[in-house]
Image (cartoon, rainbow, N blue to C red):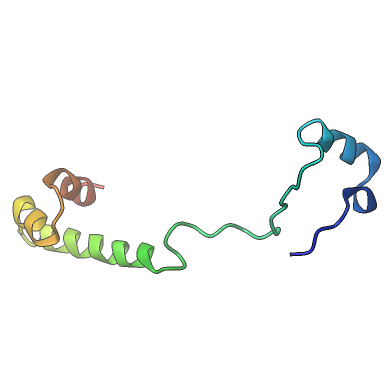
Length: 85
């Protein structure tokens, strides 16, 4: 990453406003991209959505909450949250 001097880039009024918050230190300015949601990159979001859909399907086909909790290694309270959502 290449550092640039704020005096060379920013308008004077913006630089003075920034100096009210931070002065003489490095400041990271992230890219202007939309931040990805948790689990999008790793695939965890998709995995848990698919798992929860399976749990709802089994529950609707008369599998008990206790059986689902044992099968998926989750608490009965977590299973309730999934099926009643």
